Image 1 (cartoon, rainbow, N blue to C red):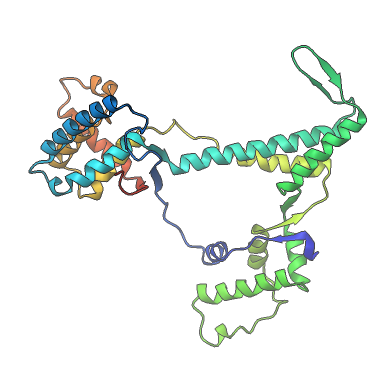
Image 2 (tube, helix red, strand yellow):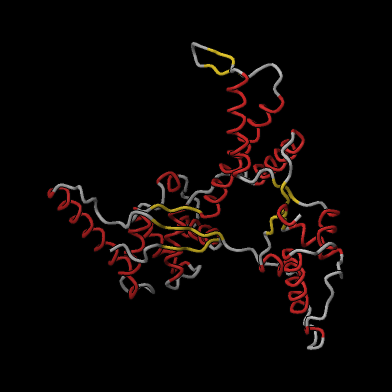
Length: 331
């Protein structure tokens, strides 16, 4: 049994399960990376001169906006960071993770589906293009199935979660190291999580003292190698489809990566949600082209302070994120 069990226990998982603490939602990260805002090295001398003239003019205009503002002493830092945001890649880290996860699980689903087709085929498998079609010989079919099965095993799709009874049996018959290590970790976290006294923290427990919570915790972090059968592949596909479902986008696509990032720069340097502060910030963001013309066209004369209303809404929305700029400065 020892070789069949894949121990995937980590202290952090065990602590969370043991203490049952409510965890505050972690802010999504806006990551600014890639191009550092420097001009293309492939520019001709004439193009480079023109670039420098425009950059000097914009920097001068930017400095004038922030003269006697609450952000005046940070003008250089803010300008550098906004320049990087303008030209770099800006992404919602959680959204990127979701896309990568979705692509990953779709890939695994394709492998499992292909193997299932090979395992259940009775009529023969064919391949075709726009003009030709041929039926694979039993030899080729077997070779292709072996490739799919190797991929299947390589991604450990032949492993699945333990049932309650399997977990209970493994822990009850704890004659190998993995089970005993888990029980040791469990009782260490139990004493720490429940703030037990010195006598109770002395480690005096039995490897046969198995309870329901311990079993549930164990099966949540442990997977077992299974024989590859049609039923096993079908069960794997069900789990993969659920993973795909979890990683599907919910709601409208996220937008405003750069306006959010630019406003978060100002917030880092003390910007508050006030008319006075946001007026300066709007002018700076508009200078960099972070405020779309389509948005501005939607403002009517009946709107009172449309720029400030827009910036206040942007301020509320961007507070759901934390900003990471790498490297710190573009020049």
